[in-house]
Length: 101
Image (cartoon, rainbow, N blue to C red; front, side, top):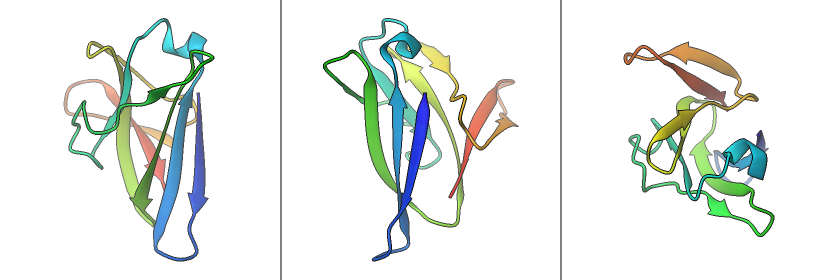
């Protein structure tokens, strides 16, 4: 798993690339990034599956903010990002990943 952040000089946003290896995706056919940046919508930010079986997705987020997110595989299995900036308890008894830009 990895997260790459790239601040843009031309506007106050940051390009964030989420990447999961084939092994980390554990045989999933589809993985989505859900968070407060997309209303936790499982169809908003579906990661692209690459030829090597890994998944990747890039989004632009407003800079100087924090975002909560998690991954959802095949619409059923939630999992976390090991390289998240922090973990924060959710109202559902689990934890959310935190991304600070």
